[in-house]
Length: 154
Image 1 (cartoon, one colour):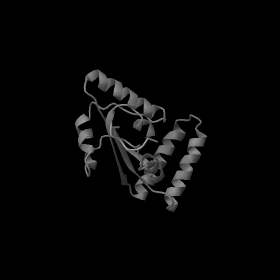
Image 2 (tube, helix red, strand yellow):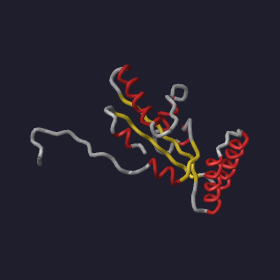
Image 3 (cartoon, one colour):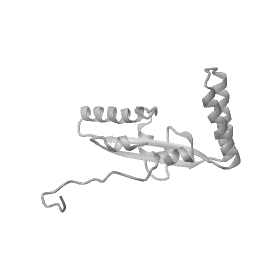
Image 4 (cartoon, helix red, strand yellow):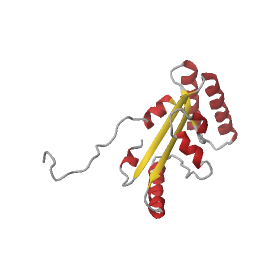
């Protein structure tokens, strides 16, 4: 899902964390979300059916859920380059239908949340399935490097 970021012409750091949540707590949260969806009466029956399947998968042990956190720290030399790079990064998420937030209020906790084991600093987290997390954490990359005048090959 994050391949669009890898095509951007600027430097950045992507940080993700996923912490498993107790099954009963996750079921309670999902049922509450479903109740709010139904109360909204927006006619989202397909989403309700997907929620039913997710609740069933979780209750039967076919799936697990956890709290997910993803942050992108964009690196640039000037404020105008930074604004452009942040905008391009934001657009790559919008193309996936993912809502992002440019952090300003919880900027410092967001920085510390990038370091391993700092779950308590995470300002924004979402409950997602282990399958959803696998889509974020694809464990592949594009080849990187610079061509030199003395490179081998064609």
